Amino acid sequence: MITKEVTLGHKGITKKIVMGGNNPVTLQTMWKESIVHLYKNNEQIESTLKQINDLQILGCDIIRFAVPDVESAKSLCVLAERTSMPLVADIHFDYTLALECLKGNVAAIRINPGNIGSFENTQKVVEACRDNGVAIRIGINTGSLPQDLLKLVLEGKISRSQALSETAAREAQIFEQLNFDQYVVSMKSSSVQETIECNKYYAEKYNNPLHLGVTEAGPLIGGVVKSTMAFSELLNNNIGDTIRVSLSSSPENEVIAGREILHECGKRKGGVTIVSCPRCGRLGFDVHSFVDRWQKKLLSMKKDVTIAVMGCIVNGPGEGKHADLGIAGSGSKVVIFKKGKIVRTIAPQDADNAFREELESL
Image 1 (cartoon, helix red, strand yellow):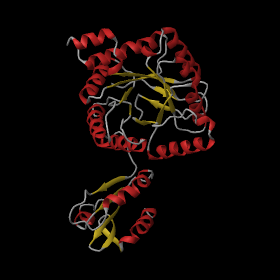
Image 2: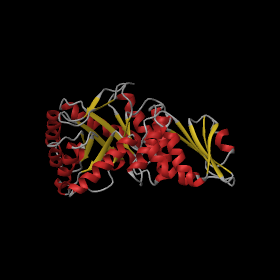
Image 3: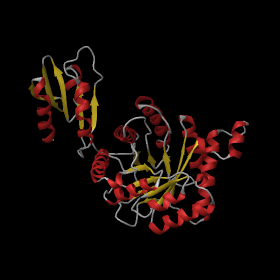
Image 4: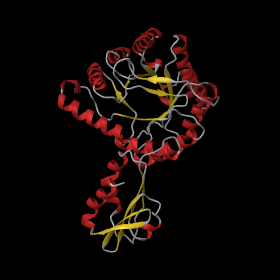
């Protein structure tokens, strides 16, 4: 089913992104640090804006910030005025913080109507979003199930996946009552299967854009595995309009992981593809350290090319012959090759400079 379109953006200067419909699946992350006093510190503002720009270059489309207090709301407004990256305010409990953020150019507000008090509080946020052309994301997780649904789950009458889907439907109905349709829905569980099931249940009945995520997915390796399993199942069934890989790791790793998932699921085209061998006893070149040094640089490039980084001549021009550019160990030397043909043989200490020169010539 094709979902309806929802525009993330502000009537101010923020770049707008359209989710749903036939638009590309977007990629987002969440800021990992407090921004409570940022608005008072220009040096910190500049540093944060640089990091936001770096994430954008890597392929991030949206960044969400926790807003637990007024000072954080002020800081987010300052950032939103100075970047083209759509920024989302993550609000819990206090609806007035959403109103404070809407004084600036935030692109969307993340709330759960069930935890910000009365219907009247939700209405105030909705009206302010409507006035400012700002979207809302409904955030549901297994810790925010209504008591009646939780009781049914504990009694075994419905699954937690069904409860998540029903909770999201109830929250969405509040917005429908207010004639507000610019909202995205997310239902998250730390269970891969529950994440898949609840999104499938919801997608069968409703056409609201879905934000996919496995919440509290864990450290880098475990979190990437869980997210990949959940997202690939859903995306390959055309369910999901935006994703976030939630990791106990850096925003950069969340973006890189999400980018690769979208690429392998056929939801994101172009850019650099890195092929590298795992390394073995034939090692003639330190693949791991080279990839670590070059990964962000390569992934930030706009060229649609494949780069191979191989440890030895077996995996080099042989298995990597399809690569537009590759580098591999060859005894005591390092070779650089293009489409399987060796173009340079150099000493290991010259590898980075030689690789850079060949990369710039692509």
